[in-house]
Image (cartoon, rainbow, N blue to C red):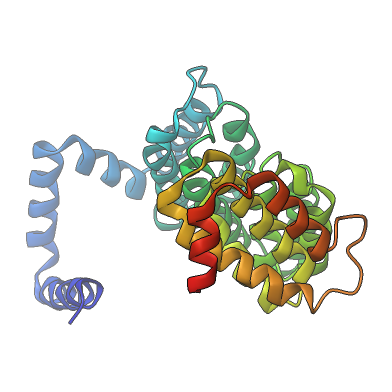
Length: 289
């Protein structure tokens, strides 16, 4: 059994045991936990006093929004975890007791993505990758808080904000998630020069989403950015990946009728060979694929 399965089974067993305990016994245990752990005391405050929960959650969101310190790519995981945890706390601790306040806080949390990207170093690719998932998760968290009639408005606003997001890949990821492949395609094709091809991990999944949606030109432009980044850095360890990217580009080229102002595959590959023809180890890897 995997770790997730073991954790679920352990939680199920604990729930069963707690259901058998008396109310008085559970209260005693909770009081002791609050006395021994500040984190537990805060959690209990959330559950028993929604006004405290609102103030604490608001303070946590404001701390991220008002932060002045530059966020390096090495710190992106912690920041992403903070955003995801706040979203989970809104759902778990406030939604049932004060859904109106939960909605307001979730909307404020959802708007953090733009603020964070403006003061984050994306040079290593980890921030784009780490913040993308919390951004999508935050959208879904907010959607869960809204009545059915308001979700369409949220979706419209999310799409509008995505197309102005400075991180093109993150915005396209969200648009694909919102089942808006046409908007994602237009964003990538119109802003291909802004793609940072060094984000190999996150861009690989984006290529697959574009291909699966039939957005072959978008997939092509992402792959070109990834290949260009490898060759410009002369990153020999990644030449095997680069060779696979070029093979994929050759295959995609046969599916594209209109490059919408971008070079055809034939022109692109010719330019590539002129610029990097001396990187013989790369071209040798291409023959091996």
